[in-house]
Length: 117
Image (cartoon, rainbow, N blue to C red; front, side, top):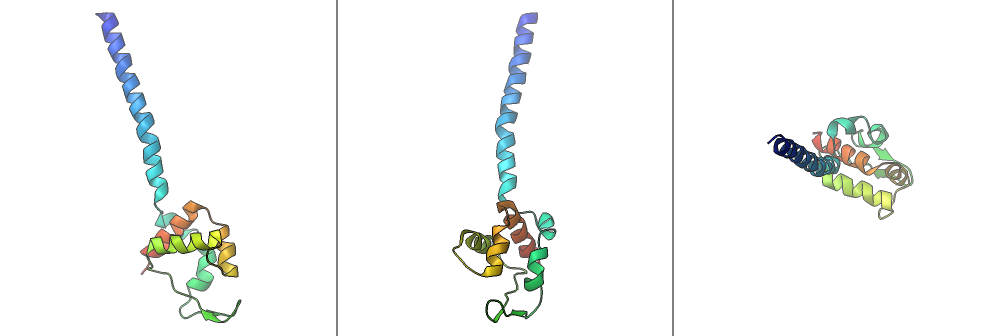
């Protein structure tokens, strides 16, 4: 009887450990997919110099109006930053900035700007 109880306890413990090993990586992957707006707030110092000024125009490399991105769809911002990072879109300033960002930085920045009004 004592042996049977010990085997059942060990089997139960093993089952719990296996289920935790399966669930934990899946949970971590879910967290990495979305952006964190609060974390993004600390990552936008490179962005606000142009995108935070209403009706801002820049003269590099030519004169153009810088778009306001506050309230923009997060997926759009992610796609745009990834396109600059991959060279699919080109602008000297944006190429350099996007190239320095990790995928999580991009998701966080996109979440931050999407939550602004």
